[in-house]
Image (cartoon, rainbow, N blue to C red; front, side, top):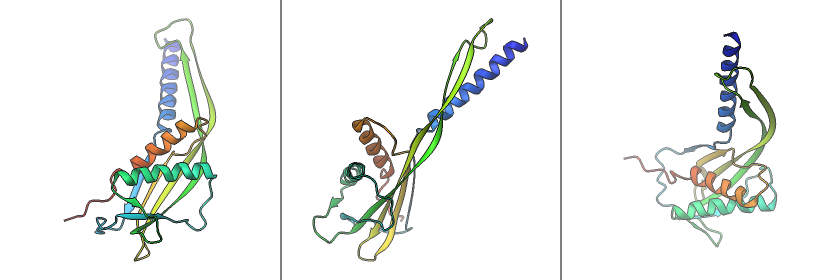
Length: 181
């Protein structure tokens, strides 16, 4: 009976580790904006560089900007071709590392005479993109959002772009904020 309880406990621990590893890949977003700000007047935007922001390679920079351009176009905003725009936007990115647990179990709680479980770990890169929007005329920050677990060490460029696109669409899902009445 003790041996069976040990296996049940091991199986439960391994299952929790596997669930935790899966949750590590879910993208998290959060946003903040100036309360009461009317965003309906913003029709155009222009890219700006944020001073002191970590520089990414040109390919990843292009992928991020294309994903944001696509999400903003879906919201009715147009990228300005000249020097004037309603919004100035810029992003910052940070890449950190996190431990990932890989688990499996052979056997089960009701299998007598054998079965074993194993857990191994590996390091994965977790990237966060912070997007800032400034009122160009007032020169003030009006909207800020972050999407974590967006940049990864994905080797396939199409999968990397798909992940970035998904994160930026999720980040800008509720943009522009609805005016409070």
